[in-house]
Image (tube, rainbow, N blue to C red; front, side):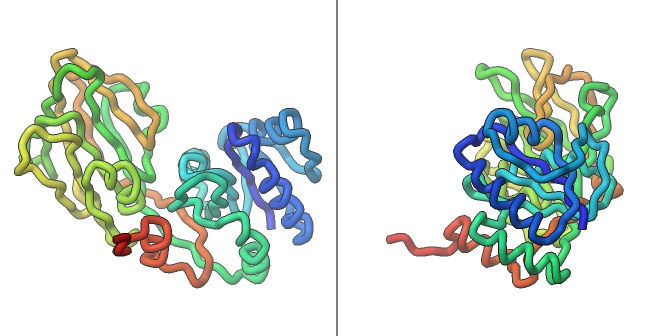
Length: 289
């Protein structure tokens, strides 16, 4: 198999996991191509000796599987580079929590033995697409986790006029609004009180950030519906964050959010269960008294 490898470049103390990974891949006679930035980090800063590999920049690569070495942030960056290629992505967690990157370094050997035997599953994860007239936002308009609209300063809330399929939903007075996929429901959306959604539920969660009114609650809608946002702000601008990549936007910009016409394919071990992940990663349902 041919693997394209991405990794984070700011966790020097965890570079030993990368050394173990490349050793395992060599044992399986894997063909390697490595993101140039990650390769330079490992060879020049960490002084690792790596096996022969192709180097690539941006999204100029092809492979049978993508490996993301880091946390969920690294996985999101890898997913944005994969884009429409349809290449399945395996996340190796050298970060902290790790919902997307959920293979621990201790599981790598067993996981690659399973991959070598084609004993794994691939989950299709939905993606959000942003449409607007701001060219800065359209450079990378796709989100695997969420698209968030947020106030720019600390002085006042923003007003977000929200419509679903061109029918008025509500006008939010809040610090922001998070539009999340099921994949993103355990990320930023959850931290502001949004619901947990099962990955294949074909839904979108709309969750306000610090709403002015206590009777405004998160709502879950079908993922084939279109969301339209018109934002007002005293500063006449606001922030749009697409999987954490934020840009300033003027208040006259209308935002339309809908399901993209492609999915991200996530590699999971054959015995993986979403509810097991909730219990182990979040201590979901645990009585800690």
